[in-house]
Amino acid sequence: MGDTIIPVVHQQRRDSTDRVTVLVLGGGVGGVVAAKSLRRKLPEQHRVVILDRERDHLFAPSLLWLMTGKRTPSQISRPLDRLARRGIEVIGGEISHIDPDSRRVRVVENPHGDDPLSRRLGGVTSVLEAEHLIVSLGVELAPETIPGLADAGHNFYTLAGAESLRHALSGFNGGRIVVLTATPAYKCPAAPYEAAMLLLDHCRRRGIGDNTQVDLYAAEPGPMGVTGPEISGQVRRMVEDRGITYHPEHQVTTVDGSGKTIAFANGATASFDLLAYVPPHRAPQVVKDAGLVDHDSGWVPVDHQSLHTRFPEVYAIGDVTGIPLAMGKPLPKAGVFAERQAKVVAHNIIHTITGKGEPAVFDGHGECFIETGAGKAGFGAGDFYAEPTPQIKLHQPSRRWHMGKLLFEKSWFRRWL
Ligand SMILES: Cc1cc2nc3c(=O)[nH]c(=O)nc-3n(C[C@H](O)[C@H](O)[C@H](O)COP(=O)(O)OP(=O)(O)OC[C@H]3O[C@@H](n4cnc5c(N)ncnc54)[C@H](O)[C@@H]3O)c2cc1C
Image (cartoon, rainbow, N blue to C red; front, top):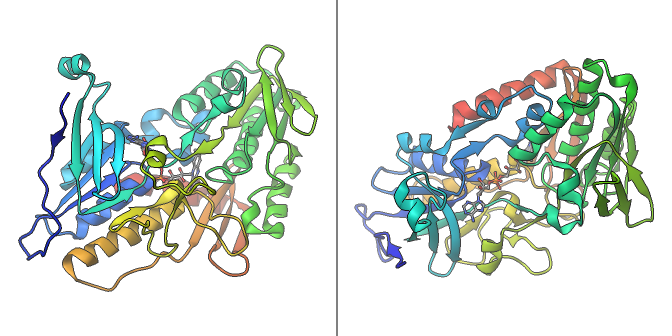
């Protein structure tokens, strides 16, 4: 099948009538925020194109509520196509090649499309070319790298896994629930801790709390390590005070689904009746193949303020990036950073195209809610770029912060889709 080249304007000297294409790779948090922010301020003549293999944008924080039956899939996702009403071109398909030198991207459109033609052809391949490229392709989840893990447990970091966990929970009448982090670094460092607290709360509400034990086996030495020992200790206490047994520095090696046991690198073993896990993460293969990834960190290096990669007019934002902090650990992967980075990159591209305004910088500020169950949440916020260590303040769990998270969820779709 031949490649179709979508018409482009080449980057020579521009006058005000030139048409520029901005290509946004990924329709997750960073991608949607970037595309929408661009479209709001870019003159109409310029194209904003967003590409994703999924039809729907998923609000991942609510997967934790989906797994305990408080949300349905349709409540936490919206069709990306809605962006088309705002003048953004939405292309559904698998990005199979990125050339950051020419800013050309190959996409196999609708490889699993419903229409008979795309079923027969197995997808139509197009090549798009842009003056500005934003890579927001997130992470690839790799449960298969831990033998037995995928068959034995529920990967609540995906919609399918959170749904299968909800289903398993409905038939669970007590026993031992294990929440497991399969590697020390993963997106949303609070999520497995929240998951453990919400699962226990759910069982208590169902009246099976007395027969239920929740254990959290973590590969990392403590919760949310980048925030420093004090905050980490406070989050650990939140978990333990609720009756969860915490086992840090337990690196899983194998899982035996039939015997329902987990083996760890330190020689320990653990049994479970229900296993909910965070899988290993890695950069998407297509991003690695593009030569965008740094060999040592495994992620895309960027300028920490502008999110520029080493390729002209190619930016990377969100989970796919690796941004080292002064304290020696990387900036955590979280939607709040993807959102703020997307706004900065969109602003700076608009500035480059129109010459209006002043360039903006990403300042490393971030915040997160920590759901603790029983209608409460904690809230942490601060400056992750502060030196020598991030300066974060943690507010203790209360109904107020839980309400804040509910409002944030509501406002997400209103603002972006
Ligand atoms: C359970 C859970 C709870 C969370 N809670 C929070 C929270 O409370 N607060 C917070 O800040 N963050 C939270 N996060 C993290 C947050 O969801 C991510 O950090 C955020 O989504 C990152 O945005 P992104 O744009 O980098 O990547 P993503 O949002 O993952 O988007 C990447 C997109 O790229 C697409 N894609 C990838 N490869 C290809 C390809 N080859 N072709 C086509 N499309 C492709 C994917 O389909 C996806 O839509 C949570 C995550 C999980 C799993």
